[in-house]
Image (cartoon, rainbow, N blue to C red):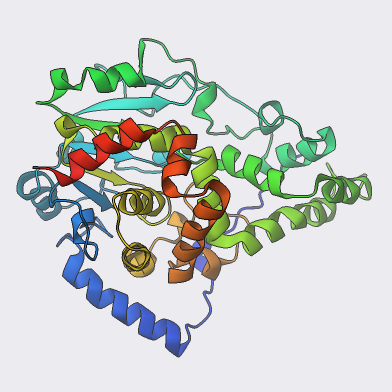
Length: 393
């Protein structure tokens, strides 16, 4: 039996903001007017060079929101005035499938699509009539993919997501006619004159489940399940078991989301940094749905590596605070995670403390941003190449 635990976020009543929060939003709105690109439908778009005292040269790399519903004016600003050559789409396959404008010819007809696969660090160039959404998909189940978790927990998780649900784990897809990502970067000079759109899913539902499971005390979850022998047939039992997961997600909030992004999205983050390090691909614009979480983490890593002060990084992240109201689309909330009983206020905003906590977590867990990058394979030579690409004429 499958139970639909999803909720309609358009009906979510977000609590009234406090006077302090209102003042913060008003301040960020002013800064957005100063720093964001003058776009109509594409939200949260700005040059990383615009961050306070940013060492990055203008016109090299942009952080933006979903670009697929761009207006004619937006296309003029992005592709003619700013001459964006490379788009990097960080969304999960589920999000892509839900985007009706994913293949809009007005936006993407001049772009060659490339798909990054974590398994083997491979990249596939889509040719002819092949699109991101008509590629062969392999049905997978959470209980087949999460290792080291008690079977009873997996039975619950599988039921929670629904055994008929297609989990968007591209790592399980067969990559035919692919090339190693490293070789693709090495051969980029051959492609310097063409526009490319790279699909790099750095977070999806399965990764979020893995990460949340890793933080739970498994014996507590198992104890709850054992107390509920009717797990697979009783909605009340399922709700009881689901509580530890939801409590962990809601209490962890955006800092935990960012922590999981850095951990489980590491292969994709390295690939994105490699692309941005390649002058042949400039200017680069990278984005997720709202351009806040996945986009914000990558922007923070780049700015920190190049020497931007924490206050400037935090401010740049906080400019995303108004984006959900502007988009009028609550479905964008934590786009890689199917929304089930989440605390809307926790995930809709971009409070400064979230990015402060994220930077602190990097330093406490890895020692520094440089050491984090070492851990994902983006070594000193790679970092020097990135710095050169973004700061030298």
